[in-house]
Length: 342
Image (cartoon, rainbow, N blue to C red):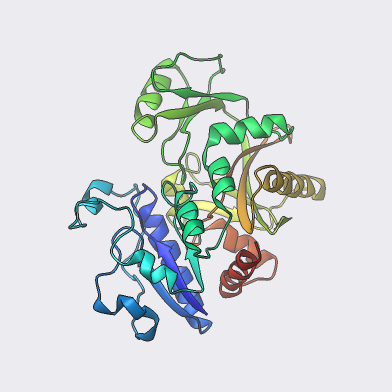
């Protein structure tokens, strides 16, 4: 099968995406697929782009790595000689049109928010993951929270707040401030008092013009992957320090991850049930991953859905699939299969 693994881009999650893409690329190559790893923003300038799958070339990015902080996107933009007039880099669309499917290894804005999915739908390009409409619903945490409340899905109490608006209600300390359309815990802050709250909003508005303010749930954190509506075993995430932020997500050894999670069977079944319900309510297709908190009383709260879960060395979905008997290479092929059926 001819596959373009699409990664990179100009979201704050660029480095994560490049690592995800590299691992997927190597896995598919090992399975014998004719695979290309392509940066959606930087593209490819080679003269052979017109018939790209005929050439033999190693596209892997062994230099791809995730630092302690998100990358400097302005530096990336300067790498484009055309002044970033078009989000899609040179020859990206042409090369994607030659593939049997595009494996979406993008994260965050312009990748997970439905824009590229909409463009590909118009061009007849097949891609992995859910469709445009459900990508929008899951990426916008204000819409997600609204749908959760309407469908009795347990979620932390909270509200959305646009820059310049006054608070809609009071949330007791501590509270959480997070960007409305973000991921990888970029722009997420735990606030214990008014001064921290004001600073958090000021920083969060640098990433997005709208934020979510919600109650802080003290307890244990879990994640549950769902493939074609069926939940995988849950995984518990326990950072050694602080909360599950960007550094703890991607630096090996920063977090203890236990899969399957060591919890009573009733709690496990409840997590899976709610994850599958979220998949249905947000009209997700193919696969996704849901994040949860469990408070000290054992109550669970769904935080959000991730429509293009990470596939790095420390990512959660591959660990859950492994617990279900599916190794990484098999998982990558399986995600292509279920995406072609959507």
